[in-house]
Length: 347
Image 1 (cartoon, one colour):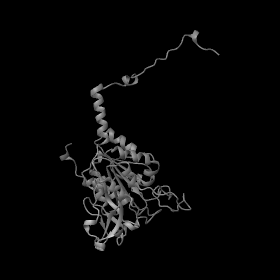
Image 2 (tube, one colour):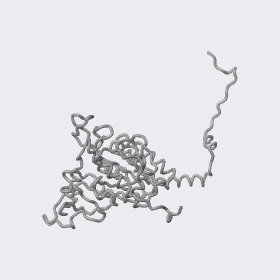
Image 3 (cartoon, one colour):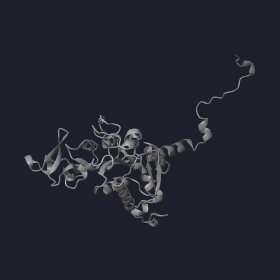
Image 4 (cartoon, rainbow, N blue to C red):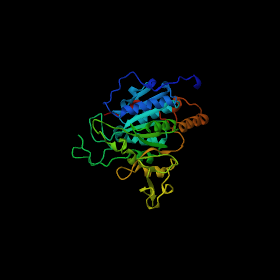
Protein backbone atom coordinates (compact mmCIF):
# COMPACT_ATOMS: atom_id res chain seq x y z
CA UNK A 1 0.00 0.00 0.00
CA UNK A 2 1.47 3.36 -0.97
CA UNK A 3 1.75 6.20 1.54
CA UNK A 4 -0.86 8.13 -0.44
CA UNK A 5 -3.43 5.38 0.07
CA UNK A 6 -2.88 4.83 3.80
CA UNK A 7 -6.05 5.37 5.85
CA UNK A 8 -6.37 8.62 7.78
CA UNK A 9 -6.92 7.58 11.39
CA UNK A 10 -8.40 9.54 14.26
CA UNK A 11 -7.42 9.33 17.91
CA UNK A 12 -10.35 7.04 18.69
CA UNK A 13 -9.09 4.57 16.08
CA UNK A 14 -6.08 3.85 18.30
CA UNK A 15 -8.24 2.76 21.23
CA UNK A 16 -8.52 -0.97 21.93
CA UNK A 17 -11.70 -2.79 22.91
CA UNK A 18 -10.51 -3.09 26.52
CA UNK A 19 -12.00 -1.11 29.40
CA UNK A 20 -9.39 1.34 30.70
CA UNK A 21 -8.85 0.40 34.34
CA UNK A 22 -6.77 2.89 36.20
CA UNK A 23 -7.94 4.57 39.38
CA UNK A 24 -10.43 7.40 38.69
CA UNK A 25 -8.49 10.63 38.40
CA UNK A 26 -5.15 8.96 37.59
CA UNK A 27 -2.85 11.01 35.38
CA UNK A 28 -2.39 8.00 33.10
CA UNK A 29 -5.72 8.77 31.45
CA UNK A 30 -4.48 12.16 30.24
CA UNK A 31 -1.27 10.63 28.88
CA UNK A 32 -3.18 7.86 27.08
CA UNK A 33 -5.46 10.39 25.40
CA UNK A 34 -2.54 12.55 24.28
CA UNK A 35 -0.62 9.61 22.86
CA UNK A 36 -3.60 8.56 20.77
CA UNK A 37 -4.01 12.13 19.49
CA UNK A 38 -0.33 12.36 18.57
CA UNK A 39 -0.37 9.04 16.72
CA UNK A 40 -3.36 10.23 14.69
CA UNK A 41 -1.78 13.62 14.03
CA UNK A 42 1.52 12.15 12.87
CA UNK A 43 -0.13 9.66 10.50
CA UNK A 44 0.83 6.53 12.42
CA UNK A 45 -0.68 3.20 11.35
CA UNK A 46 -1.92 0.65 13.87
CA UNK A 47 -0.34 -2.35 12.18
CA UNK A 48 3.03 -0.59 12.14
CA UNK A 49 3.03 0.56 15.78
CA UNK A 50 4.19 -1.40 18.83
CA UNK A 51 3.97 -0.49 22.52
CA UNK A 52 6.22 -2.40 24.92
CA UNK A 53 5.78 -2.08 28.68
CA UNK A 54 7.27 -3.61 31.79
CA UNK A 55 5.39 -4.02 35.08
CA UNK A 56 3.42 -1.39 36.97
CA UNK A 57 0.35 0.81 36.61
CA UNK A 58 1.81 2.54 33.55
CA UNK A 59 2.61 -0.82 31.99
CA UNK A 60 -1.06 -1.59 31.39
CA UNK A 61 -0.75 0.89 28.53
CA UNK A 62 -0.46 -1.70 25.69
CA UNK A 63 -3.85 -3.19 26.62
CA UNK A 64 -5.54 0.11 25.89
CA UNK A 65 -3.92 0.77 22.52
CA UNK A 66 -5.41 -0.71 19.35
CA UNK A 67 -1.91 -1.48 18.08
CA UNK A 68 0.56 -4.29 18.60
CA UNK A 69 1.78 -4.48 22.17
CA UNK A 70 3.84 -6.44 24.67
CA UNK A 71 3.25 -6.48 28.43
CA UNK A 72 6.70 -7.75 29.25
CA UNK A 73 9.01 -8.40 32.19
CA UNK A 74 9.74 -6.08 35.10
CA UNK A 75 12.34 -3.54 33.95
CA UNK A 76 13.13 -5.32 30.68
CA UNK A 77 10.92 -3.36 28.28
CA UNK A 78 13.91 -1.48 26.72
CA UNK A 79 15.67 -4.78 25.93
CA UNK A 80 12.57 -6.31 24.37
CA UNK A 81 11.83 -3.12 22.43
CA UNK A 82 15.40 -3.16 21.11
CA UNK A 83 14.85 -6.70 19.82
CA UNK A 84 11.61 -5.67 18.14
CA UNK A 85 13.23 -2.65 16.48
CA UNK A 86 16.35 -4.33 15.14
CA UNK A 87 14.29 -7.25 13.85
CA UNK A 88 12.02 -4.89 11.92
CA UNK A 89 13.43 -1.34 11.78
CA UNK A 90 10.33 -0.14 9.91
CA UNK A 91 8.17 -0.49 13.02
CA UNK A 92 7.28 2.51 15.19
CA UNK A 93 8.28 1.27 18.66
CA UNK A 94 7.33 2.91 21.96
CA UNK A 95 8.29 1.94 25.52
CA UNK A 96 6.03 2.82 28.44
CA UNK A 97 7.55 2.50 31.89
CA UNK A 98 7.43 4.05 35.35
CA UNK A 99 9.85 5.44 37.90
CA UNK A 100 9.90 2.09 39.70
CA UNK A 101 9.96 -0.22 36.68
CA UNK A 102 12.39 1.91 34.68
CA UNK A 103 14.78 3.20 37.33
CA UNK A 104 15.12 0.38 39.85
CA UNK A 105 15.26 -3.12 38.34
CA UNK A 106 15.20 -1.61 34.84
CA UNK A 107 17.83 1.09 35.31
CA UNK A 108 20.57 -0.86 33.56
CA UNK A 109 18.42 -1.61 30.50
CA UNK A 110 17.23 1.99 30.29
CA UNK A 111 20.75 3.38 30.39
CA UNK A 112 22.04 1.15 27.61
CA UNK A 113 19.15 1.60 25.20
CA UNK A 114 19.72 5.36 25.48
CA UNK A 115 23.48 5.24 24.90
CA UNK A 116 23.01 2.92 21.91
CA UNK A 117 20.52 5.35 20.34
CA UNK A 118 18.01 2.73 19.23
CA UNK A 119 15.24 4.52 17.36
CA UNK A 120 12.48 4.01 19.93
CA UNK A 121 10.43 6.38 22.06
CA UNK A 122 10.53 5.94 25.85
CA UNK A 123 7.83 7.44 28.06
CA UNK A 124 8.67 7.29 31.76
CA UNK A 125 5.67 8.04 33.97
CA UNK A 126 7.07 9.51 37.17
CA UNK A 127 4.65 9.64 40.11
CA UNK A 128 7.39 9.27 42.73
CA UNK A 129 5.74 6.20 44.25
CA UNK A 130 5.04 2.51 43.61
CA UNK A 131 1.34 2.55 42.78
CA UNK A 132 0.61 -1.01 41.66
CA UNK A 133 2.08 -2.52 44.82
CA UNK A 134 0.22 -0.06 47.05
CA UNK A 135 2.36 2.93 47.82
CA UNK A 136 5.95 1.97 48.62
CA UNK A 137 8.57 4.66 48.07
CA UNK A 138 10.30 4.59 44.68
CA UNK A 139 13.71 5.65 43.30
CA UNK A 140 12.35 9.18 42.72
CA UNK A 141 10.58 9.64 46.08
CA UNK A 142 11.81 12.55 48.14
CA UNK A 143 13.90 12.11 51.28
CA UNK A 144 11.60 11.64 54.26
CA UNK A 145 8.82 9.99 52.23
CA UNK A 146 6.68 7.88 54.58
CA UNK A 147 5.31 4.74 52.99
CA UNK A 148 4.65 1.06 53.84
CA UNK A 149 8.28 0.31 53.00
CA UNK A 150 9.67 3.44 54.71
CA UNK A 151 7.45 4.03 57.77
CA UNK A 152 10.03 6.32 59.37
CA UNK A 153 10.68 8.20 56.14
CA UNK A 154 12.91 7.35 53.20
CA UNK A 155 16.61 8.04 53.70
CA UNK A 156 17.45 7.41 50.02
CA UNK A 157 18.29 10.50 47.97
CA UNK A 158 16.02 10.53 44.88
CA UNK A 159 17.26 9.93 41.36
CA UNK A 160 16.72 12.57 38.68
CA UNK A 161 15.58 10.69 35.55
CA UNK A 162 16.64 13.42 33.12
CA UNK A 163 20.15 13.61 34.56
CA UNK A 164 20.51 9.86 34.12
CA UNK A 165 19.28 10.03 30.52
CA UNK A 166 21.66 12.88 29.72
CA UNK A 167 24.59 11.13 31.38
CA UNK A 168 23.80 8.10 29.21
CA UNK A 169 24.22 10.35 26.14
CA UNK A 170 20.56 10.14 25.07
CA UNK A 171 20.00 12.06 21.84
CA UNK A 172 16.57 13.41 22.85
CA UNK A 173 15.55 14.28 26.41
CA UNK A 174 12.37 16.05 27.50
CA UNK A 175 10.04 16.54 30.45
CA UNK A 176 6.38 17.49 30.72
CA UNK A 177 3.36 17.17 33.01
CA UNK A 178 0.42 14.81 32.45
CA UNK A 179 -2.25 17.54 32.36
CA UNK A 180 -0.21 20.37 30.86
CA UNK A 181 -0.89 21.80 27.41
CA UNK A 182 2.69 21.13 26.32
CA UNK A 183 2.44 17.33 26.61
CA UNK A 184 1.13 16.84 23.07
CA UNK A 185 3.81 19.10 21.59
CA UNK A 186 6.60 17.24 23.39
CA UNK A 187 5.24 13.85 22.30
CA UNK A 188 5.11 15.06 18.69
CA UNK A 189 8.75 16.12 18.91
CA UNK A 190 9.69 12.75 20.41
CA UNK A 191 7.77 10.88 17.71
CA UNK A 192 9.58 12.76 14.95
CA UNK A 193 13.05 12.31 16.48
CA UNK A 194 15.42 9.86 14.81
CA UNK A 195 16.94 8.02 17.75
CA UNK A 196 16.19 7.17 21.37
CA UNK A 197 13.72 9.77 22.62
CA UNK A 198 13.35 9.87 26.41
CA UNK A 199 10.37 11.73 27.85
CA UNK A 200 9.81 12.00 31.59
CA UNK A 201 6.16 12.72 32.36
CA UNK A 202 5.21 14.00 35.80
CA UNK A 203 2.12 11.90 36.54
CA UNK A 204 -0.22 12.26 39.49
CA UNK A 205 -1.02 9.15 41.52
CA UNK A 206 -4.16 10.45 43.19
CA UNK A 207 -4.39 7.45 45.55
CA UNK A 208 -0.89 7.07 47.00
CA UNK A 209 0.89 10.36 46.19
CA UNK A 210 -1.75 12.90 45.23
CA UNK A 211 -0.54 16.45 44.75
CA UNK A 212 3.15 15.65 44.35
CA UNK A 213 3.27 18.04 41.40
CA UNK A 214 0.67 20.57 42.44
CA UNK A 215 3.26 23.32 42.12
CA UNK A 216 3.42 22.50 38.38
CA UNK A 217 -0.32 22.06 37.82
CA UNK A 218 -1.98 24.74 39.97
CA UNK A 219 -3.35 27.35 37.57
CA UNK A 220 -2.52 30.25 39.84
CA UNK A 221 1.05 29.27 40.65
CA UNK A 222 2.48 26.96 37.99
CA UNK A 223 3.93 29.66 35.74
CA UNK A 224 5.99 30.89 38.69
CA UNK A 225 7.29 27.38 39.29
CA UNK A 226 7.83 26.14 35.74
CA UNK A 227 10.46 27.18 33.19
CA UNK A 228 9.16 26.48 29.69
CA UNK A 229 12.06 25.65 27.40
CA UNK A 230 12.13 26.92 23.83
CA UNK A 231 15.15 26.49 21.58
CA UNK A 232 16.90 29.78 20.88
CA UNK A 233 14.85 31.71 23.43
CA UNK A 234 15.94 33.20 26.78
CA UNK A 235 15.21 31.25 29.96
CA UNK A 236 12.42 33.54 31.19
CA UNK A 237 9.53 32.46 33.43
CA UNK A 238 6.89 33.76 35.81
CA UNK A 239 3.26 34.81 35.45
CA UNK A 240 4.47 38.28 34.56
CA UNK A 241 7.42 36.96 32.51
CA UNK A 242 9.68 38.97 34.79
CA UNK A 243 12.03 36.24 36.08
CA UNK A 244 15.00 34.65 34.37
CA UNK A 245 17.98 32.33 34.74
CA UNK A 246 21.55 33.57 34.45
CA UNK A 247 24.78 31.64 34.92
CA UNK A 248 27.50 33.22 37.03
CA UNK A 249 30.75 31.24 37.20
CA UNK A 250 28.78 28.33 35.67
CA UNK A 251 26.25 28.43 38.53
CA UNK A 252 22.56 29.13 37.83
CA UNK A 253 20.82 32.02 39.53
CA UNK A 254 17.28 33.38 39.44
CA UNK A 255 17.10 37.10 38.66
CA UNK A 256 14.32 39.64 38.22
CA UNK A 257 14.18 41.62 35.00
CA UNK A 258 14.54 45.33 35.62
CA UNK A 259 16.33 44.94 38.93
CA UNK A 260 20.00 45.84 39.08
CA UNK A 261 19.96 46.70 35.39
CA UNK A 262 19.05 43.13 34.34
CA UNK A 263 17.58 42.95 30.83
CA UNK A 264 16.56 40.19 28.44
CA UNK A 265 20.06 40.27 26.99
CA UNK A 266 21.52 39.08 30.32
CA UNK A 267 19.36 35.96 30.47
CA UNK A 268 20.81 32.61 29.35
CA UNK A 269 19.47 31.31 26.04
CA UNK A 270 18.27 27.73 25.64
CA UNK A 271 20.16 25.57 23.16
CA UNK A 272 18.93 22.01 22.56
CA UNK A 273 22.33 21.13 21.07
CA UNK A 274 24.21 21.99 24.27
CA UNK A 275 24.48 18.84 26.42
CA UNK A 276 26.21 20.73 29.25
CA UNK A 277 23.41 23.28 29.47
CA UNK A 278 20.83 20.48 29.33
CA UNK A 279 22.46 18.74 32.28
CA UNK A 280 22.60 21.96 34.29
CA UNK A 281 18.91 22.55 33.62
CA UNK A 282 18.08 18.99 34.67
CA UNK A 283 19.48 19.78 38.12
CA UNK A 284 17.16 22.76 38.74
CA UNK A 285 14.62 21.71 41.35
CA UNK A 286 11.83 23.26 43.34
CA UNK A 287 11.62 25.30 45.48
CA UNK A 288 14.91 27.11 44.83
CA UNK A 289 14.45 27.12 41.06
CA UNK A 290 11.61 26.72 38.60
CA UNK A 291 11.53 23.22 37.11
CA UNK A 292 12.23 23.22 33.36
CA UNK A 293 9.63 21.65 31.07
CA UNK A 294 9.98 20.90 27.38
CA UNK A 295 12.86 19.62 25.27
CA UNK A 296 16.22 19.77 27.06
CA UNK A 297 18.32 18.15 24.34
CA UNK A 298 17.80 17.12 20.73
CA UNK A 299 20.79 16.10 18.61
CA UNK A 300 21.44 13.84 15.65
CA UNK A 301 23.48 10.65 16.14
CA UNK A 302 23.91 7.40 14.18
CA UNK A 303 21.12 4.89 14.82
CA UNK A 304 22.03 1.60 16.49
CA UNK A 305 19.95 -0.49 14.09
CA UNK A 306 21.57 1.17 11.06
CA UNK A 307 25.05 0.45 12.41
CA UNK A 308 24.08 -3.14 13.14
CA UNK A 309 22.64 -3.73 9.67
CA UNK A 310 25.79 -2.13 8.22
CA UNK A 311 27.96 -4.61 10.08
CA UNK A 312 25.87 -7.54 8.88
CA UNK A 313 25.96 -6.35 5.27
CA UNK A 314 29.73 -5.85 5.45
CA UNK A 315 30.20 -9.35 6.87
CA UNK A 316 28.15 -10.86 4.05
CA UNK A 317 30.11 -8.94 1.41
CA UNK A 318 33.51 -9.95 2.79
CA UNK A 319 32.76 -13.45 4.09
CA UNK A 320 29.72 -14.61 2.16
CA UNK A 321 26.33 -15.64 3.48
CA UNK A 322 27.63 -18.47 5.64
CA UNK A 323 25.71 -21.42 7.05
CA UNK A 324 24.87 -22.71 10.48
CA UNK A 325 27.20 -25.65 9.90
CA UNK A 326 30.03 -23.23 9.14
CA UNK A 327 29.32 -21.40 12.38
CA UNK A 328 29.42 -24.58 14.44
CA UNK A 329 32.70 -25.70 12.89
CA UNK A 330 34.64 -22.44 12.73
CA UNK A 331 37.87 -21.92 14.62
CA UNK A 332 39.47 -24.70 16.66
CA UNK A 333 37.48 -27.93 16.39
CA UNK A 334 38.07 -30.94 18.61
CA UNK A 335 36.92 -34.48 17.94
CA UNK A 336 36.31 -36.71 20.94
CA UNK A 337 36.70 -40.41 20.16
CA UNK A 338 36.10 -43.43 22.35
CA UNK A 339 39.32 -45.10 23.45
CA UNK A 340 40.02 -48.77 22.92
CA UNK A 341 38.77 -50.93 25.77
CA UNK A 342 42.31 -51.97 26.73
CA UNK A 343 43.13 -48.32 27.42
CA UNK A 344 40.07 -47.71 29.58
CA UNK A 345 40.73 -46.92 33.22
CA UNK A 346 39.23 -49.32 35.72
CA UNK A 347 38.54 -48.99 39.41
